Length: 368
Image (cartoon, rainbow, N blue to C red; front, side, top):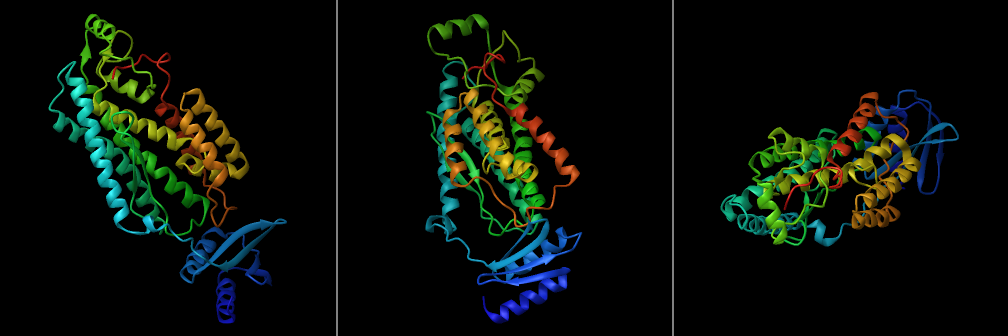
């Protein structure tokens, strides 16, 4: 660390905090502070240090609050992620995959009951599904912007059209450092809430337009294997949407239209994101509230829930990734969450339960 930089940093820290002790090491400057109100002061310092290409951390060491400042060396991004064309290309691929998937699903449904032109229905399906995912990511971006964090454009992940789901969601990356727990919490919660609002709207529209088969006709189609019972689980929110139009409960054989399938994917992705695991949105929220140790246990608990719901691949993925990079750590990891955010997390747990794909033997299923 250059001498001029050291003097400037020492001057800045002393102008913000009440410093009771100062230590200089080979690679860092350490300040013991006595301030009772320190959260907003540290946020101010962290932003100034980041602009100077330094990173500072606030920790509790032997009961004392200590600010440690070091030279910041940003991680090198992979070349394919550093170009502005990558998210655009991925988005174009995902649009094509979703359109193909929607066309195929509409054609298959039309062989049983006419629901519309395959190309037109594929467009509605694409708008519905990417609307859910896009608004989810927009929620993250707006929350990050409100806290002065810059982010990348969303990276949409292509899936497996026709044989699976056409997209595995999307993600953004922060271009800055997360300063405290409240910022991490706010950015994490904004995405699922925003996306869920759209998923509910799509679910209600899908339930309204989904055709119902006569039980006798459905029985014949089952026998001919033209219909297969839906066994991927159904969320309480989707069940409520069907019930709004008298299509819920036993004795109602509801066709899983492309729009209803888009809502199902939306609820599934929201549920997965709200799990208190790894670096999922729910994992970030759990980490800010519970701390790193309990967050680790919550990750294992989430893996257990996924196994019980027969989502083995997702469970294995979270298990592997959680060992590589268990959780995000804010620069200020000692400032607690506000009471309102703690109450909000209780709401998040409720929403996760409402979005969970409950087994078909728990709730009457719908037909693909």
